[in-house]
Length: 386
Ligand code: SF4
Image (tube, rainbow, N blue to C red):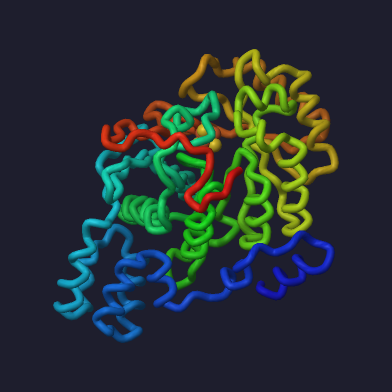
């Protein structure tokens, strides 16, 4: 795997981001615990605990989803007592909503009282967890409930992994396991790359959650340098582009971030991603009545994708915010038919969870502490502007 990555980013390709090679090397248990919960690793180090204790704690937390540290009975009492001081860092489920069929939304409380949402989707052949990467979002897409919250903060690696662990606890009790993770929840994942790449590394770790790279998808509205970095660091992970419009004029209205990164720049980045990974681009297209759902819009989409290896997912809009309406079913069918007639690989994504506000674009923590007003910043904690 490492050799393949080196070859793919060889002469002629774009420069590899600093640290990318190190990211792909296998993790020791101590490194894995440090990546997941540096506070726990520091406590162990202060106790001069032997290496196998890092392994025991890491495996306990990853292999027994939902288990607390106090239940890790293989540890001596002294270590358990010391680790108990870190219990307030744990992410907890404060509310759960079921749509009565296949979808459960979990509202999670973080250590500072902020909340995020995670969605569990049960299919016959897989269980997919849709995770959040930020509390709120700075990008303010006009059709998205999260965009209306403003940006509060980035999530940590632990807060992303805890969403999968807690979802895992839920489905383990039903005799199933999490097989897929999609970064399509609250926030723009490529504006929180440090935590995103750390979390993907832990998701893939065979000693831990042991997910296949191809079972992981990152969805973005289009952060070009992040798309290229994803190709370098995680070439097997799926890339989904939330496109929603084929002209800059319309896209600027739907996704204000498009003014900073216009379509041509974003598509150039996805072309680089394909050149490096040979992975099909997933294109997400939410259909908004009278806005982007005409036959001519479908033709423009086919033109834009001509020569690119891509598959389009049409998504019916779920009421979230903004002065929009979902496309009517005959318009959706016409749009799909037109794309098919133009040889575009297209499917309609069955939207799950709208009855519990858990569908695409509907995620927004229902309560945010008054002490934490949104931060009006259009850049991530690492200072990268987009
Ligand atoms: S669609 Fe994604 S990027 Fe846009 S506001 Fe919502 S969460 Fe943020």
